[in-house]
Length: 250
Image (cartoon, rainbow, N blue to C red; front, top):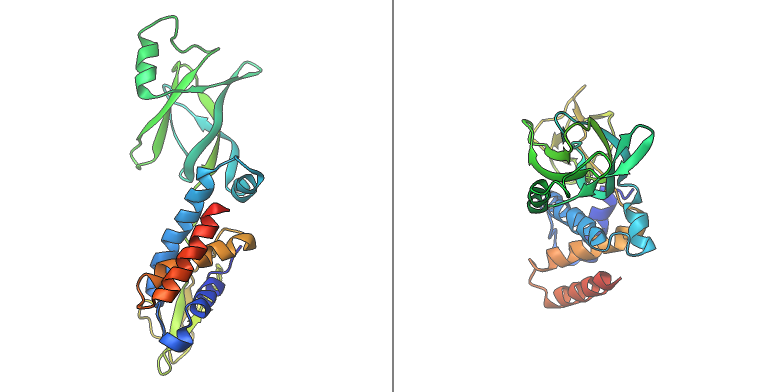
């Protein structure tokens, strides 16, 4: 896990805030890292299982053998679902059968011909539509199948850096990624405007990056590139763009 506060400190070092002032405020930082987090994920998914690196990096985000109950062949995918990997499976007696995932158009074509229609031995499925909570659904044929097992990549937690600010110096103090309540002392103001005092506590909503230390340089490179585009510093932009290009080739 990469500490979000460490990422912020490293970013300030990279863009030399000592020379140009605070060029990336915390609210802006929290918006940018959400985007960066998704960009890193998408890059690994683009080359998913093509090499050992992508397999290792996404290993912690894999969920295996998740069991879904089906009603009339329809089930809601888990709330953490991001993308299906491998083939779903059904249990026919004591034998697991692979479920062939098809497009909606292909499913319609198969349904028109009894020779290609889905059977218990050769089931099919499509993904699409949502339930009443807006959760994606999977539709399995034949509809007599009552449960299915899937492997999938789960969604990422969104990194966030929570903080309080000293009323006189305006220096922020960061909260850790923890479930413990945090003290908000007198003389400090929480991010949402709550004023500190004796016995005042807040719940930290800080979230660290889910990536490993090996991804730190990639995250910082992407961050610097994003921030550099907003600064009147052509050299920083050129350098960060070159670093971004090298990172994309790894």
